[in-house]
Length: 316
Ligand SMILES: [Zn+2]
Ligand SMILES: [Zn+2]
Image (cartoon, rainbow, N blue to C red; front, side):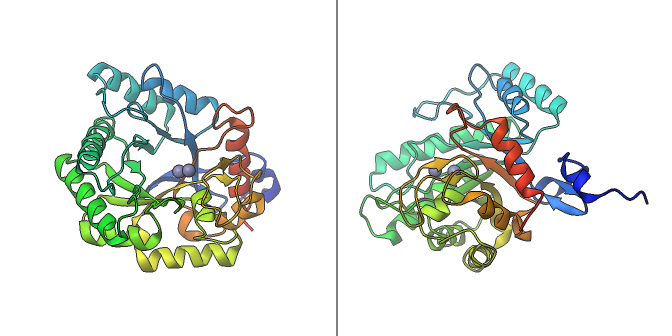
């Protein structure tokens, strides 16, 4: 075997082979698993543009809005648009791809009308996910607006179950942990209870690092705390449900319950925090998707992607 100094390899990540696993694609980097690093990218002007946008910043996987993020009405992409997108994606070798649901969605709402519209919106977005072969549709559990948490859990479970019932296929519905303020439901307890009620293998979970810190789910990102977080996840939800990470730094401190994303290394998680995250074997084979403001304020950029990749290649 040719011997190469490890520091030379570390200059040129990603290096190594692309593999497939139960959880999707990942890299084997210098004999250890590397997460697939990607970001939320715009799909304005047609789905295929998202692929070009991902390539431009060096993302290997991505998240997009399948339709408008601020409207109830959903326009399904045409067959031609989907074909162009798929061809571009194949050529780029990108993946996995996730969709993010519209911000209006609130399955936990006390209003039946709001819940109905939310289910309808999730159904339409999940149809798009399915049509374009996306891994899943990520959504926020929502706000109970003051109602008891038990009620919220039942409503979310019922809405998620109905959505999955209406859209068959492989694409998953993925619940994201929330910051916890203002009656927001979405801690590990609640997510675990929703999953137990729905009993579908197509219901997954996304952990957002910024929300984790802001909600107080994790006090700081050091190795011991990161391990505790995923131990707790495993106990309350089951680690096999964890499908993807939203890897964002936080502008607000632990327990702030204020959701403000920050560029990698510039917030309360910091570079060392993400190094600690990278040292956790249970998340090293997952896609890591950034939703950061960008160093020029225009959304996730190459600088964030490169930085996170180099951090992931040198865990603490
Ligand atoms: Zn997120
Ligand atoms: Zn957020």
